[in-house]
Length: 543
Image 1 (cartoon, one colour):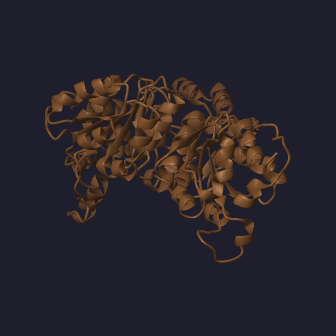
Image 2: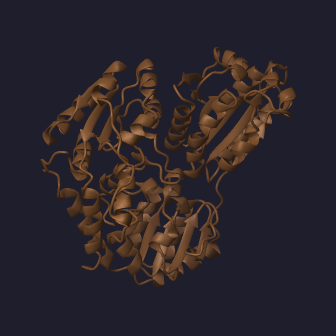
């Protein structure tokens, strides 16, 4: 069997549905072998779009998304999406063609050492130097990508190796099982929780990845401990849950940070430091931290772990809850009322350009609770993280590890491919939208219906927000935009332009009902950014 055919067979053996990428000269043999494959190759318009699609597919399904490129510039275009997946702990396998191995030792056209380039942004980077190692390397790449903490891996495939003959069987697929938590550590954690006066839970995306959300909800309810989640763990417990405080991570002295300041014990469950750095929520470094996760804690001066409970998160939560003493009263639950009041305050606003709070209210009202929003990076991300209510995990996807702009449009396409029965909305700023808007053509070619909601402020709103907070004046953040509705229609998609506040809800409902891609251009008033920071600062001391 030709090595390229063996490689495709190994990918099929891993249960891969889609490969996102762009064909090139150095992956000709693999592309030809894919013609007869059960997998679908999705031709994208940019390799970064392909990597983001694989990134979001992996995060939503827990199975490694796969992206592919040719050598040189094709491969380097993958890096941003691959790094995003790795830092956000989304399982992904990236594949790149490479020049003939007889050219790799010298300066040669489009040749870069891809194995070394991808090593810092992946869990594992390898090169296929003989057909015989293809089954092992492929199995290892998927095993490592899909093992906690999940992340990205990379395989480089030289074109001359792809033409050689090799074995004809992939290796059996098997994934490791998370271990049971040590009983001694469970007892120590339960003792600290029982003796705490004002504990609080910080839940991270590891809870979502390990499907421990139900156990976490029962843990918080049984022990009567309020819970806040990182941006990447939105929906980890239902917002209607009486212990839910909403999302932490605004990087302002808001009411959730007040909750951390009042707490004497902070229980971190499935939390990764890249989600929300501990110096922002634990600047004093003097509280007791209980680390409950599938892997040991990262070393950080503001994250001094009193007890680490390492193992299956679901079982850790169950074991601790069985023996810890429930807490009687919880003053921190008053913070929940402040959050709900804030969310409801602007539901009937008619201001235009629209306030972020009103856009989010209309979006949440138009969508079903199990539909999915893919949020880009920018000022809108901060508002979505704070105000968009989630009842289920993985219904609002936010990148907050690598936090790369441009993820929403390709990510929404991948989300629809993973869950065709759900409504999918890409929430993006005008800056992030233009970074990968070319993938609208990919969606139209594949007949994928998603909604792209653009928060239009003709600038990099989040950076201006930071500049105003720091210097009191903006610098080089403004730009011009095309007519987004016409731009959408040029691809054959539907385009809507919002000209007054009461148009957004009907446009959302129509776009969600359309059996095609729709773009909604919604002007936003980001003067609310500074008001949010000021308001939350004033709210710190009432409780």
